[in-house]
Length: 47
Image 1 (tube, rainbow, N blue to C red):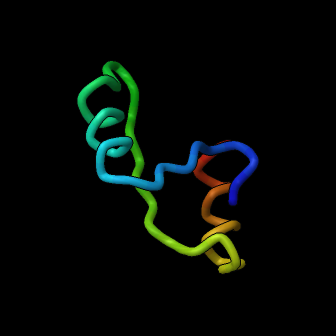
Image 2: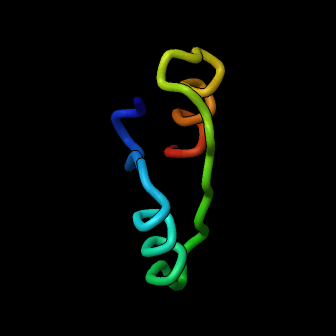
């Protein structure tokens, strides 16, 4: 899991973030914690 980005593990969490995030860019990335490409993408997105 990324150290910089929140991990959302259920539909309720995802719905809540979508409904409450305003004036920001929301990026949802679906992937596995052990996938090195996903972790690289997390680092790029968080910077």
